[in-house]
Image (cartoon, rainbow, N blue to C red; front, side):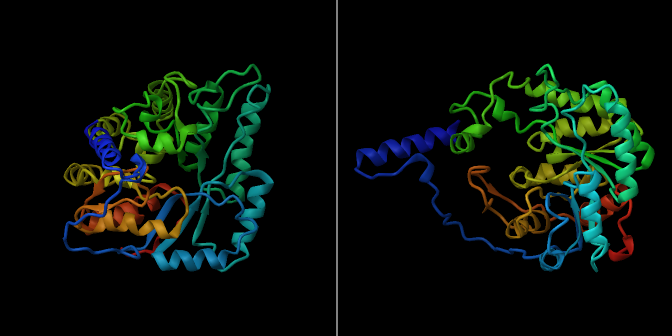
Length: 360
């Protein structure tokens, strides 16, 4: 990769001239002078459909709501509702507060007991119980298809037929399934100068995978697409734009092929920010299929999302260089597309969100 070669050349030159500079430390500030329009809060109130709060049953919700207000976040979706008695505890905390309209919880399922003869029946009952308790969606973690194994040590596939009735029940109840499958494809590729994630894999070596660990990337992603096709009456939200944010043409084909597939932008804003013209065309055509998500809840990171989505700023950095060493450009999305991304599409997909809290 040209970038790797260039930095290697710099490192070699620095050694020749007696400078002690490591490859990873080369990160000069840009001398480019262009208008800057940083955003501390979103232009419109928004729903974050991808957040994790494992201890919401014990959280100080006033503190969370104050942070949300500072960002103009109207509703947060906690994907880590866990289900059963844990969900009961969470819903008790939410419902006893003044903020029950501001927090939506999804439930989760336990896959490690899938070999038990009554697993499917009991898990469907659990979904029904959790829905009555207050869950308004199901989150499937990437451990399904990756690290979860049955009693024989075999990988539990995403499209394992025993899970099918669970997805069907979600469709029957009218709640979406937000699913994270695999990771960026580069994690499965050789860790060499041609890998765009070279720096990330060097700094986070546990993310590196062999070509078949635990299965090829294409196999895992195809299993996800299989469930979308096998359960057309259930709405699925593919986390992280289904790991195709760097190939929006392919993602467009998938959305055309599977009308019950939606995507959210958590942790992939840097991919959109480096292709502003292509991303704009994508949002124009698929404005009804994309939702706002962030993934890790760190209030200080949200403004980068707002800046990419709302401004026409040029050449500004992502907040994690090892994720994206490149600079980004604002998409300057039209207001109607912003409204759909920020809240209208979430209201359409997730039951229980009070639409009166948002502009028309």
